[in-house]
Image (cartoon, rainbow, N blue to C red; front, side):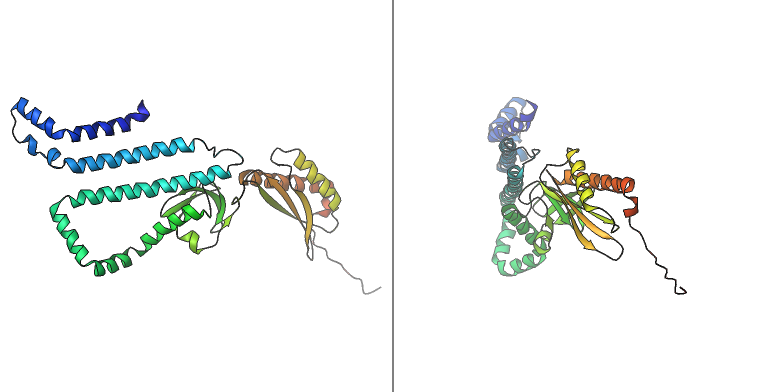
Amino acid sequence: MKKYAPIIICILLILLFFNIQSIASYVSSLSGVEGLENSILVSQKNNFLIACFAWLFIILLRKGKLLFLKRYDISAEDNLEARKMYTQINLLEKIIIFIIFLFATGFILLSFDNIKKIGYGIFASAGLAGIIIGLSAQKVVGALLAGIQIAFTQPFRIDDAVVVENEWGWIEEINLTYVVIRLWDKRRLVLPSTYFLENPFQNWTRTSADIIGSVFLNTDYRIPFDELRKELTKVLENTPLWDKQVNVLQVTDAKERTVESRILVSAKNSPTAWDLRVHVREKMIEFIQKNYPESLPHTRVYLEDKTV
């Protein structure tokens, strides 16, 4: 019952204002108080009705959104379709609410004669006013259009893993004028919508939630790579973080003092991939320390005896 309270209150207010004149006359006749028929509630009845209907439309819109999104589980492992719908519906809701608010405010303001005259004067000089307003609101309008474009083109979605401004996190909110990114350390990075249309960024989960992570090891030239591969397989098979898809160890560089090995592993999503990378790095370093300590990075100095 509590969740339907706003709808019930809104409908009761609409019924009240529809019959406010009759109610005012009835109360006036009973109490003997004159002038109730000319009170602000009666004279502004239409404006109150506009506000109530706008409120009712917004409430019904939000209820409909919640009912529709119940069919999609954004917490599932394969949540690409759910994230797509959450992004589109949430942004569409914000656009519709903005339009409802704009029209309701406009109709209420036009009911006042003085404001109506001002409106006619503005329309008469629409050319100059349009230029001034256009220049002053250029960034605001640009941000709104960018938000609408993001809603339909979807370069990212709710809960996508992204790298922006050298920061790694997840898309938490997509609004008409700004986007909120939840960073890995629980900070929030807030960026204008136009940023994502003007600057490059990384989206790690654009087409699917699963992801490949990399771990780099720098060791001495004496390290046995086959043993490293066997240990990597053993580490992965003993952790639930691995999705059993990718298990690769490759030598990617040979430097003056060390050899660089790159490990590729896969996980079901970006948070799990991060934990898996940390786990694999720790276990592989422990393995080298215990079994091949001589293969840790060394600095060699050769002394040549020229007296011999």
